[in-house]
Image (cartoon, rainbow, N blue to C red; front, top):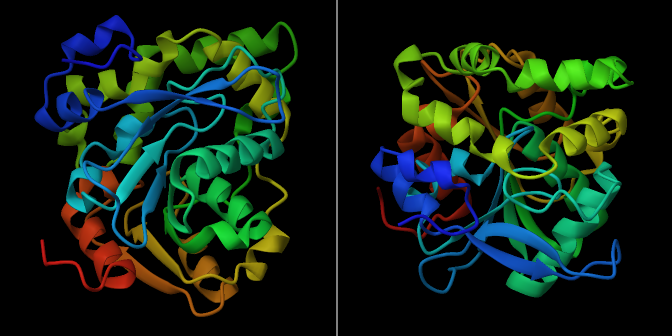
Amino acid sequence: MTAPVLPAAATALSEPTSVNLAARVRVAPIRTALTDVPIPTAYVAPGKDAGEPPLLLIPGFDSSLLEFRRLLPLLEHHAWAMDLLGFGFSDRTLIPDLSPGAIKLHLHSFWQQQIQRPVVLVGASMGGAAAIDFALTYPEAVAGLVLIDAAGFAAGPAMGNLMVPPLDSWATAFLRSPRVRRSISRQAYFDKTFVTADAELCAALHLQCPGWKEALIAFTKSGGYNFLTSKISNVACPTLVIWGEQDRILGTKDARRFERAIPGSKLVWIANCGHVPHLEKPQETAAAIREAILPESPPL
């Protein structure tokens, strides 16, 4: 049975990993300095008390925590997942400011109120940029980073110049199109058979939440994480970079750039894999995380 935080269309989810994760999504009222009222925030907590160190999984741009449906069960007892401010199933309607600064403050408030221990942040795509930004500001809260085909060096969303009326409505309508989203999904995977009806539903469920269009416009107009490039070399925590060898969204050059820029970082390539190793090769991705971050965990 799906959690009430998800749109009614979630009842059509069909793959076991999707159904199981959807049933675990909950909402926490997170108090922040951004507003006088708590912000309803979608998250998934570990099945039991999280081991050490706990992991916190952060999804990418215009996505939701459902993108971790295949990875999170392989990291059980260690992994949390959450939707960033303005994304996924977290509330979009209370905060007009959806800049990286607001996202970071909200993420820190979630960490303070729900976890309260140093975490390993696992960021996918734009979630990787958000994780880096958080680690640079709140190093005491971060035990390590896992960057999965992460943004940070790459420029922000290409729609930025379109986010003025009436082009902003046109741009978001374009991105809402099932045909466009299917094309993006096919580009994200090396193995196109992963683009199933269930996968398409997971990727689109959050579009039905109030304020999707307005939040996407507000974040894109903020410039996103374009400011990070010169700061990445300041990351001081242990860092694992995981990258699909056939990434057609960001390419592969940035994988080596992260490895060179972050002192002591380790790069793991995932073969026959596109932009989403956590979806396309979850076993290999989990194994890399376990070896680097959770060395005492039992083998998969």
